[in-house]
Image (cartoon, rainbow, N blue to C red):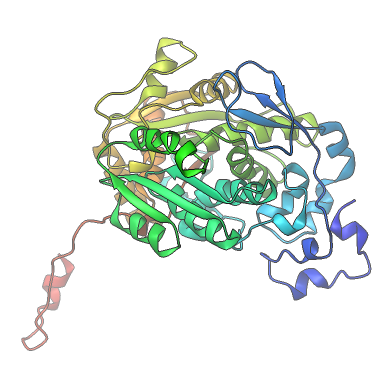
Length: 433
């Protein structure tokens, strides 16, 4: 029974409390959850829930499994519509059992922003703007759940490698939870990211290597430092947080889905999580037969998933000499590669790579035509969309959602060097050029 069902005499409370309020949880000792077990994403063997787990025995990601039949009986779509918007609206689909362990910074529902000037045909083109979340990126979703579950499981020290935004989200949520955090970044991580990680309470280091090499430092320090490894897909719960992107998108579209979703893919947690969300919604009857085609977008300078997709393999090989302006998708090797590729193939989608020049051009085009400043990773999805319209893999009459994973202000922008001398006559005509 939901919090609203238990307190029907107080319908005014959703008006009195802000959308990000966890007031309903304050009234309950437990949250309604239907977790049954954890499951190896590759082998399918089971592991107990409510215990600290990292990777499976096969060294692969664990997936949270639910009693979907019971979940479907417990809540109706109409009930969700009565709740405040945001990540915790979907609490039955999430694993936290005790309300006291929820760690929140006010996770909002992120908007679907239509791009009418850039739509080439009858199909609607939207951007799901994840930059509106706490810490300015979609990493807040995954780390909100991962840190909440770390708190529930009694973990007191955590560590991760990051290209920037995940580290910032970890620092914020871990500090909020009273959990000690250690973060390791490639040395060319955007300066704003490194500073915000430190400012929000984590211990942070720059490392003269890429993210997978930072990951080796985290793995190597587990015994000496006693920390839990929160690297992408090395624990089960970041997927569950990212899954809410799919739940929220379907909710915003009236429990329907677009024809195509283009997602900037590094570690791929969000793509995997969304596909999991759509499958769970379909299993309980909230979605029909149509599911979106999932498109994994990578940079041409680091495209291991694209290469594996084109070669028809289940796993991707390490990408050497990885480079791109979109640092968030510069992931030379992804431990969940097979899960990304399965989602792409099962959905009838594909993987595609775009050049850095196209990414920067796309960022400028969206900003100057629609007034929406995308981060480089988000711009990569628009570049891919334009590219695939030309190849014919996407039709101009299909509806498409581009995921902008962070606020564009976190990244260096082109310099502006025009000046005026206020003590001299102003040539106003010259201002038009």
